[in-house]
Length: 119
Image (cartoon, rainbow, N blue to C red):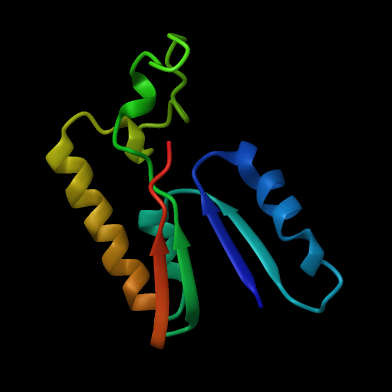
């Protein structure tokens, strides 16, 4: 297994490396890029990915007051490219659709993808 990680938040690089660290000495390639998936995915060859896992935000939910503990909101980033910072729902859906189409382009024949929406 080779792995490519793309995240707009650089703080999650270590999480990615820790979770995939068991592959560190397996001769596999781990690559983590910080950036916008809308542009970074274009660098991945067509039909080169066996499995894609995406975890987009629940639109702007992190900008709202937390209900479980009544805590303050904790946005993922303040980056305007972050999908969680898109103001209009229709724009969020359209942008996520564009990313999904690009992920599909990278999948091999009979490849698979899973989307885990997460805040």
